[in-house]
Amino acid sequence: MSQVLEEPDEHAARLEAIDLLTDSALAELSLRDLLDELLERTCEALGAETAMVLLLDRGSDDLVVAASRGLPDEKRYGTRVPVGAGFAGRVAASRSPVYLDRVDATTVLDPALSSAGLRALLGVPLISFGDVIGVLHIGCFDPRDFDDGEVALLQMVADRVALAAQSRRSRLEHTAAETLQRSLLPGRLPDLPGLEMAARYLPSEQTGVSGDWYDVFSLDSGALGIVIGDVVGHGLRAAVVMGRLRSALRAYALDNDDPAEVVTKLDRKIQHFEPGVTATVAYLIVAPSRDSFRISLAGHPPPVLAGPDGTGRLLRVTPDLPLGVGVPRARHTHVVPLPPSGLLCLYTDGLIERRDRPISSGIGELCSLLDTSSAARACASAVTTMIGSRRLTDDAAVFALRRADPAR
Image: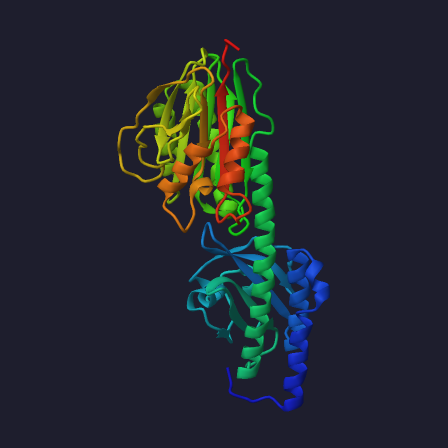
């Protein structure tokens, strides 16, 4: 890459070309159409014949072709290049521009590049908030030595592409996570004799969708399974893991009536198939007689139990380790009476946590404010008093179960 300086008129023309990349008309395009348009404008601005964007797949640490222009087979989206390998992989690993004046199978991994007859390639990283999210490169069929001004211009284009791509991806992921989470939460709670149930789910306004969930299902024995949990993290990844755990727990619950055994299997599943993921879960089984329940806690805050007098107290059950910790420890099932008119409130930490006070204060407040006259009023009082008008910094879920009094 040479040190040739641009003439003032040429420099102004290139800056004008950059401004075209922020055209407001691009704002409504899909990510694929947006990248195709940006690559066409990039080729025009830099006099290149080919251009390609590869985006980082966070799950595999591979660069995946997301858009291409000027190559013989432009529909080969999905081609993967490991970070650190080949031309694009070197650009991502070094986080700096890379120039090639020989393009063949010894310098690039993508066959579309090595067989296209290119004589020069220039690639720059796509960086968003300090992280490499992909690579942008351009190519020429004639020998060419890019000067410092052209390298700087391509990096400016890459910055615009990174901003646009990250914005679109974040928006798509958030929408997908919301859709997935809503599809997995019970649409309607079971209507069972002797029990009334209610639930609320409130998404965070700051962090977006997370891995909070609750579930209710009837078992063959006539018992009722209830679970509430929280996958550590936010966004689409947390929502996907949440969905997998929900499905796995339902399957295990059909074959085992011991909550501790079900949670143990769920822990093995997450350690084997979801390494690095941590989650908390409370799983309980209400007896067919409705006079008791069995519960196992995996790092989750204990429920609040209110007796017939309406006084709420924290269930004195010591939680076992969260899921995914990897420490082999026995898990426990605790049997708890559920008296007539008794109310059980399960929740995730988003309901009780606040930055200006300890969690114990939030739990104490929840115990004192619950309206135990019905499950619906219990949820309403918890949400109204604990959250009110404040902005949530984390998702919050609350579930209430009340046993009817047969004497009434």
